Image 1 (cartoon, helix red, strand yellow):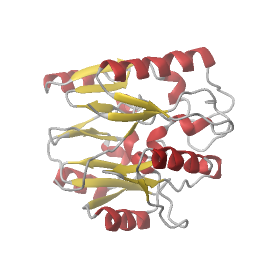
Image 2: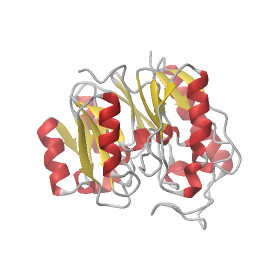
Image 3: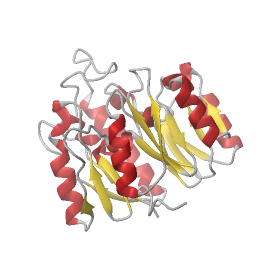
Image 4: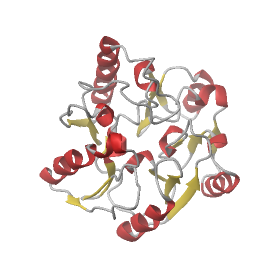
Length: 270
């Protein structure tokens, strides 16, 4: 059973614009927000995940995207240092939540921007970390030193895919699926070298944020829309659970953005 952290969307809304998807002129529909979040919560519970809930806070509408809260490996939690002031207020609430549950809280230096599982995902034998739009590449060295693991730094070049979890999803069989156009040439080579068995997602399906998926063993929870990708994953023996995520896509997030693993991995040993 996997332990996951979600945050109810009580205060979620498009209140500012910090990525290309967000527009205050195109607000979220509150009843649909509640229904879509509840659908994700119930689906994860039905897949035998142990889901904890952090209390949402007023004036922090993006706190619902718990993947950005930090990175948890074993009993250590590295809280995020958010690049945008609009989100910086989230960090103390997540740190307190994790500390109350017995995690050691390890803060990075304030001058190193790092946005947790949004830009740090374990795949194959490494921790793949994205940088440029939200996370600083210098934070990757600090994370590697803290955890004692191999970090592969890859540059994101398309502002629509501002976190690595929006365009890259490792699989437990050692494969992955991704939108290669989100990465520079070096990043593409680095990922293909480490994960040769990888599914390329075309741009028309990548815009569904289909790589923003929660993988629980052989079950994959992802946004509705990428039918070709779903067919390929089913051919590999995965059971896909597409869900409507339209109201969260308005803020540039989907299933994985709304979910943090506690921990993402028990240790950095592979």
